[in-house]
Length: 390
Image (cartoon, rainbow, N blue to C red; front, side, top):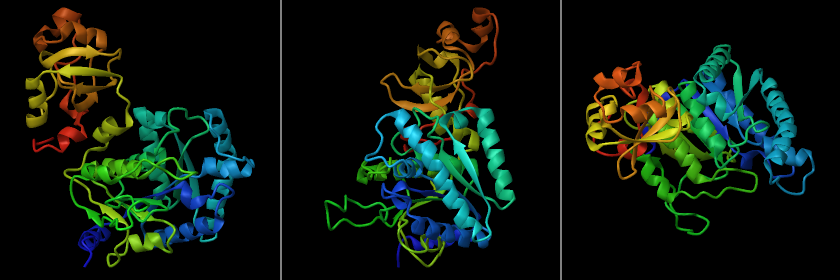
């Protein structure tokens, strides 16, 4: 029996909400949207929806669709060209989704997001509330990166990353990443004919990154490495991931069938991170770095303590209070990220001091802690170590 099946049995029993990422390679061959493929995937998603499972789609394909609709001879190279292709392509892509879901009595909603929507706490909560309202109304949200205005966001594996963030946003039970590969292999199957498909990853998903490649197809932006990275993020939020080949018939129904082994199942690891801590760890871009001494590091990792000014040795970068910062050791190893209570300029004045000196030095005191433990989250490197974590 497949090692995957016992885990799938447990997973399917509690399955109520699924986020499905559909890769560009499934939807376009650079000349047009593959309407037959999209219709088959829509029918598959509707079958899950009819079973009472909430479905959120994260679709790629806007830029690829625009390439075809504009009659471009090759993929655009510059950001303005990519944004223009996305603007043209998004219309056709959503029209196809609406057509195929409407034929099965389902209503879809377009959700366009950028990195800014997920780094700003208020906009993050607004996005979550909108998605929850749509799901409560039995609408199928179809989300995509808003490539028409994004700049830094158009990069390798963005929609893989977006799917993991949305899975956390809606508190999904399962993330499904569909592309044109069967799953994760222990070697590149294009170069090694004897490569074996990894059926299930039960622990330490970071370790399987060694098997993944960064290469993507001509219309895609993310290779296997970006899919595994997305699965790691979902795993830390208590969400399992299946990476599977979306070309095969009824792939989603097979994924939720406890008697069918398909793709690579990456199990959730450890305690579920709160939404807020997951947001800090994965949605925010650090604005600076704090060099912390060994005693403060151990107190944070082993005893779940807050970071105090006495443990701060060096401040790097220019940031304000409320920004996200990295916490590193003296030898440069990152072990945590958190929301800072003081600006970089003020931290320079109180580093190494006892908390009872803060007000005397600064003329005010926001908190005894530089970063409160509720706003502090450990990173993967330390999380994979034997030391206990909060």
